[in-house]
Image 1 (tube, rainbow, N blue to C red):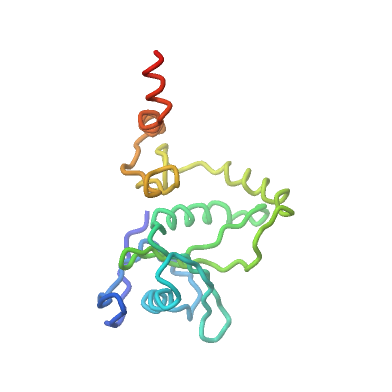
Image 2 (spheres, rainbow, N blue to C red):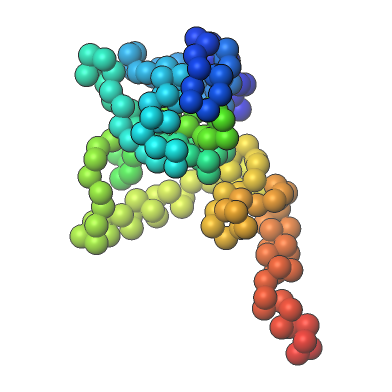
Length: 196
């Protein structure tokens, strides 16, 4: 587990409020390409583009390096840590059928999450790619979690559309607890009590 890194930024007013003197990074990769924008510059760039969640590609000033930025209110740091874990597991195998973008850094600012990762291309998958996607998904399903708890690597709330507001209200210590909670709130659970 990584300890948080404090990234110093210049004091700069944004349209929302005053940016702090530092941003705590949940993930920081020391082997990130040089010349990528700072967290401060990424926040300002994203907020100029749109107030909604989004994603886009950024480039170093010399044009030699690029990165993909995923950001928005539902972008969780647990997602960045899980992606970092998967990249470490999969990318060390040069013959792997799938490659996971390396996370360069991730942080939260003003209620939004920002994940800056390796840019792997701009091609969108379509139905013709399904035969190649299935083996990649099979490979990912073979990776064992470092813990037996459901949810993101290193614990935390589960981010998924299944939950109200797309986030679990608690962290689950076991699959059984998640299943018990899911069954208790299910409309089918109420019907079972009526007919039994």
